[in-house]
Length: 86
Image (cartoon, rainbow, N blue to C red; front, side, top):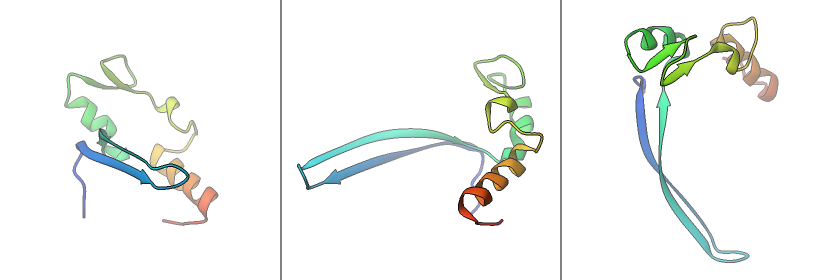
């Protein structure tokens, strides 16, 4: 299944019976996009920006700072922490 760049909505439920019965539900939303498509997506939007101020701004140095591309750094971090190679 290939996800399209979008804002996805969902619901989370948690329940337990010990040590004390407890349950909660809440709705959430999350943004998904291909990491390599961030500049393209930002260029198509008046509200999203890449490396400049806006309502929603993506600045590369805020996410796993490295000389690698964000995609390559994510793959590197996953391999380093889990041993899984893509």
